[in-house]
Amino acid sequence: MSTARKDINPPKPLLPPNSDFYQLVETRPAELAGLRQVGTFMESEVADH
Image (cartoon, rainbow, N blue to C red; front, side, top):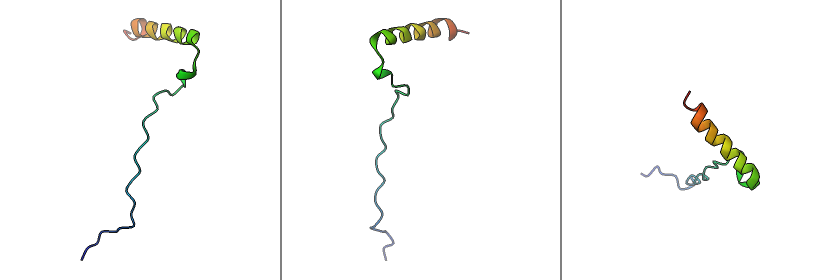
């Protein structure tokens, strides 16, 4: 006697993760340059502390 149910659907695949939490893809190039400068400063000056 088989107890497997045929009416159960397999789980849907997960969506790929969205790593762009702040929608920076839509940011203008001049603003991106400023963000890169801030990121560089944070990595070199702040991360060491």
